[in-house]
Length: 106
Image 1 (cartoon, rainbow, N blue to C red):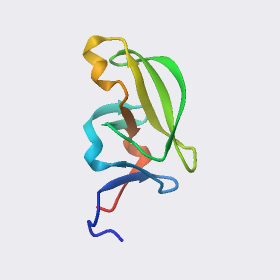
Image 2: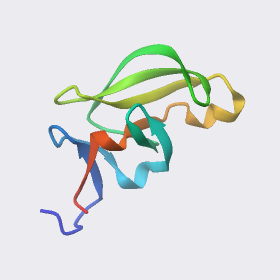
Image 3: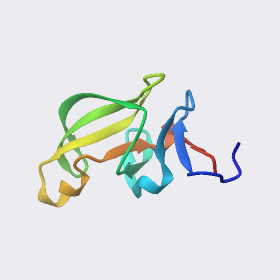
């Protein structure tokens, strides 16, 4: 396939399951556990884990790890709740770690 037909996608680096569209990236200026991470408005084919409060660089958030729907690899997390008003825009959004996703159909 490839050749730019259809939308540009990101896939799980392990099993190549499609997990997000390039067009859903809000920001590339995030840090994950293992380096650079992207903030997405939507994801697909993922499983959201249990919610927990986690203190991140930008303050306290309620987050849930997100796993690939096929191989269950942890790809990042979902922001469920932000306690700082300046961080509210992240609620309901997803972090996917750059090291855990690969470009597909570019």
